[in-house]
Image (cartoon, rainbow, N blue to C red; front, top):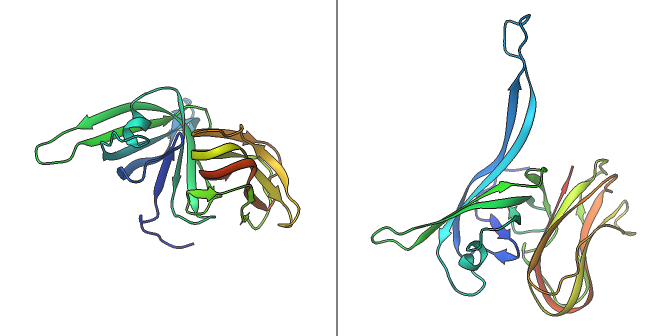
Length: 235
């Protein structure tokens, strides 16, 4: 492991590539509630673990062109699938979360471009999930069905995981995205199968049980030019 700069940080939400309009991310992380349960017999505080929460603030510039940030943020609705990558190559660290967008604020000051601030808070009970990017770019274009290269975890894990996709576009047809795993990087089996893709979309699906050493993203079906990002976290 090594220290990294912020040049490879990217963010995707609900099938939107936000990286041409967003200029800063802040508050990325998790808070753990600690509940005090100190009895009379103790002379110092005693605590137990409570609820965990995760938030993300997105700062950027107002852009009302089709498919840009205003399209992504203007309808404050239910769950959003958000992926943030710490690099642009397959296997780089990334986090994902299912979150509610709590605000979309616009700020105009004299002599400055119109700025925006958006707040997300996790909403699915799972919180922020740290894992790896399964796509390369990290926004990958599959011109047709493809098996992407695997990410090597060096060993298996026993407690399942969660996969997230953010699909920006598909030129034609229908694609099916799957997270697959393998113990030998030769024979792969399906771990997560996402809903069939015919347009811009995003989704998060959990898996239980053993996750083998190698994990990859597979696209199948008859389609052209599928543009997407995928992230997977082991639990």
